Structures are given as C-alpha cells and as structure tokens.
Image (cartoon, rainbow, N blue to C red; front, side, top):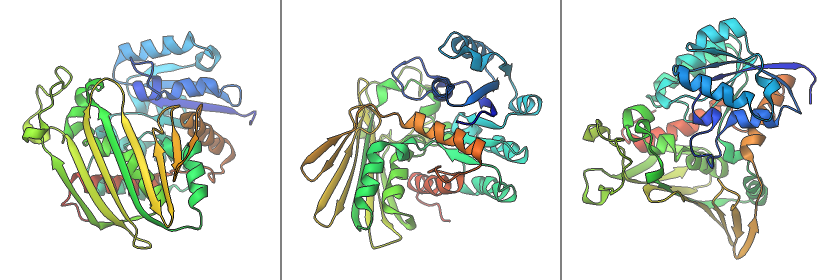
Length: 364
C-alpha cells in the first residue's frame, strides 16, 4: 500500500477497540491494525479513555504484541480533545458507549479528522444525530465509515451479486443472543445502551436495508416482551446488571417488528430476543424472491453458510472486520471513498430504523 505515514488514534480503550476478557470475541480493531501494519505505515499516536488503568493495560498489551513498532510513539490521554489537539492524528477509531457519541464526532469533523465509528452511532433522538449530519455537510472532505462489518462479508457479497437485477419480495431477520454472556450493566440499561435493537440487532436492521433498500418508516410497527411480563422473567441475568435499573429502563426481552420497503412493495420483519444461555447466539437472515429462497446463517463466525433453495455454500475463514478496517485506511490515504460501504449518512438511516422500532411513537 502507500508508503506515506498514517497517524492514527483511538477514542475508547474498551473491548470493541482492544478486545475483551473473552478472547473469542471478534471485535478488536487494534488487533487488525497490527495485522495491517505490513500494508500501511501506521503510527498509533494516542489512545484516550477515562479509565487510566485500562489505558495502561491495553498499551502494554499492544507493545507486547506482534507489531510493537506501531505503538512505540503512543501517548495516553483521559481527554479525547486534548489528545486530538496534541497528537494531530489523520484518523480515529471511535469505540465508545452509545450515550457518549455526539460531541466527539463534531469535534473530529471540525478538526478535519477522518473517523471510523463503531455502531451504534448514538442512542439519543435522531434530531440530536442530525447535528452531526449538518456538521459533516459543512466539512465534506472528512471521511467516515461506520462499523457495519456484515456488509463486508464474502457471504453478503455473494448474496448481493445473486440478487442483482432481481426483485426481493420479503426479508426476515432473526437474532437471539446468549444473554448470560453479556455481563455489562450498560447494555441492560435502556438509557445507556439504547436497548438491544439499537445496540445489537442494528446489524440485522442494516442488512435488511442493504438487501431490501430504504424502508418507509411510517410502516414500521413493533411489539415487545417487557421485563414485567410473565414471559419476560429471565432466570440468569448476569449478576448486578439490573440491580439499580428501574423497571421502565430495563430492556425488552423480545421484539418483533414489521415494515414495508420504499420500493417494489417489498415487506420485511425482524425478530430479536435475549433468551439463549451459554455463549452460542442464533443469527439468521432469509429472503424470498420469485422461485428462490436465500438464507444467511451465522455470519458472525467461521460457521457462516449461505443456502440457496437446497444448496449450501460455506464461507469459512472470512474476517470482515479486517476488510472494513483495510478499506477505511486505504480511503484515508488515497481520499477515494468508493469502497466504503457504510458512510455516516447511510448509517443514519439504519439508526432511524432501530430508533423507530424501539420507540414506535417516533415520527421523522
């Protein structure tokens, strides 16, 4: 790739940027930066987070990893704005809790810093996000990429090519999470995470848009299983996660949503739940076309399979996280954004869908 130096910084030292306690988790942008260090001349100039101990831990981890030279100049900061002003990175990876997004993006835009932003892009009313959109419009040279990594899967590329020129009649997205393996109090609090549709099922809402096109938000309807319902009584909520959360802010246990797409009369639906135990999730996306049924199973893992009618096509050994990071860094260096599949303006459409499902009274 380019021989030019690429100065990069991280906002957020949590698991999405640096991996979690569970080493099986695929999210870890720092790991991919190390993997890309042979292609790009990367200099990580800073990491910011309010947790000093976590900062020191992740920097030590990276300097003991496979590409220590990438991290030799890295400085640690408790304030992201101080980091940006002092280190002057060309681009940042933003991986913060949903309720922290907003001002960070605006500050980066005004400083002319390109952004890779992890989903969800926010958890507030879409009117708040529109301020970021307006700021981006004022600074059109700032490059953005949002972490909808499923768009970069080889299996998804295969399906997109398969349906080219055809009309999708119906889409069905199903996502059931292993809730006992999510011991994050933030995730269980609607005020902080935005809820499981905004925070988690957003990937399948985005796939729905990617395959079916834009959605008529006026047609979106949703129903929920409340934590107060008999069917919403979960037996193994991780210890302490809902201890101080009032009932009205506890997240729904299951959600069903339906909608109509803007084109062709196509219809879609989403079923999301948190009822699985252990660590295994159930994720499946299905489309019906004239004479064709296409299913995408387990796109998050190397067990990913596409089924076309009765034919199964496996897609092992794919790393869409690496692909999306490579494409973003390439765009930063070349200023060619044609390969970025989820710029911020498009991701905002997915956010509005997840917000409408979560808050049915929302009107654009």
